[in-house]
Length: 399
Image 1 (tube, rainbow, N blue to C red):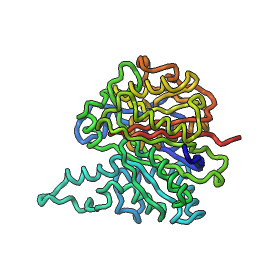
Image 2 (cartoon, one colour):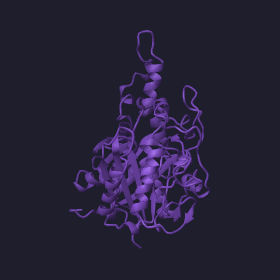
Image 3 (cartoon, helix red, strand yellow):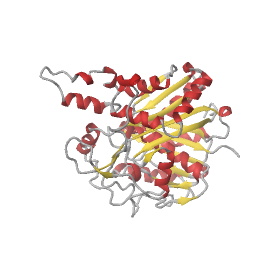
Image 4 (cartoon, one colour):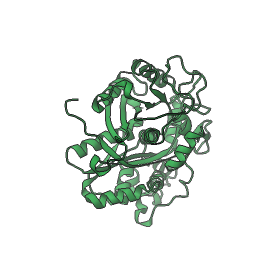
């Protein structure tokens, strides 16, 4: 890159998914090869599929002071903020830098659309929403970021990124630019997406939903399993947390090949990946692990497998973790970034749950089962509808 990239410290991070609440539950499930998918018990009408549903969302409650933001998506966000002491870390950053100097950049693909669906299902005789759902703030894409900004008391730049499945990966790039340009001293990044009918029946209409638990990169894969998740990270300059894992670089691209199908040669994905390596100053052989986008759809896995096989040596390990959690859509980027960071911190390459016979396009890089090994550098791929692609590079702090 023409301007040397200055790594940022990931001084705190957390994730909540169908595997449980917080990082310990994520890691213990990965280490035990224990998936979180279950038969669909969510949709308003029967749909034979498997989902990655987070337990405890229905019981979570927002404080009365934030009642105007009440909806399932924001309840999951609130639940996620309380894991791994993340709320305390964010409030500490606000105290150290000032409320106006901490940016908030969150990704989501559906925000609180589930509340909007409910409101339209319950229109009265005059075609009006029920009184308790006449809250404009929750019927907008910015609902998530608006709620979290209020909950954390942040007054700095506040952005919603909605680029389908790459949404909460691209937040890292947005945050880095805000810090580098002097518009913020730190950034809370992340993403939240919850299950809703629009997603379940929408993907089913595209014939992309599997009737069985998804099987990324398996020769007999037949579609995705949809999940939900919340995740957050705190990014600061290195001197604020010199021993924390680091964001080494990122790459972004938009190939605009097709509304829902990846470029057949993986052009956009490759551009994002190579830009991430270049920005981080890395060679392909220096990458220890890649958390793949790996949705278990036919075309996505075929294209991504070919890209990994032609780009990386056999010593690089690669796997998809969507067999554990389902595809968490706009929250996939932050959830899988957390898995990449856990691989660095815990020296574990998670296996490719659900895959028994690798697709012919897969090379020797693919890890079917867990592999304990040192991970110094990890990538995380996120490729969204419309050709919105992102790749993140993370690394351990120097000894």
